[in-house]
Length: 92
Image 1 (cartoon, rainbow, N blue to C red):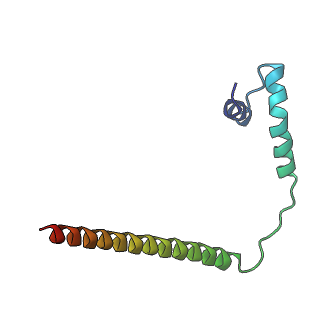
Image 2 (cartoon, rainbow, N blue to C red):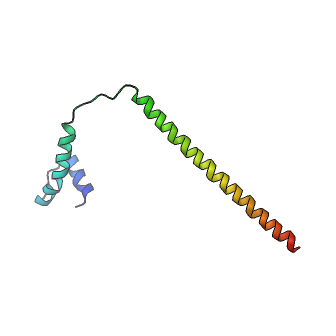
Image 3 (tube, helix red, strand yellow):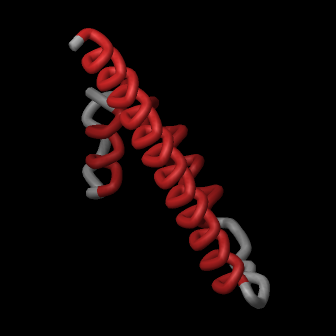
């Protein structure tokens, strides 16, 4: 049985079918207990603004990379066409 199947059965509340499945579930049960016992800590003020700024800055970075790659591709295409035209007209 795969981990996904074990987790699905555990999540659905289906009891372990074999001792091996019960053993395989133990780490997930321990983790769930740890998470359940965590203290609820309210987020710091301004967290939404910081998250949105981080999102925007990553988007800007991605956009700038695309522009740089596109510019390099256009420059390489122009250089290739220039060399091709030079060679073509030099041979004619």
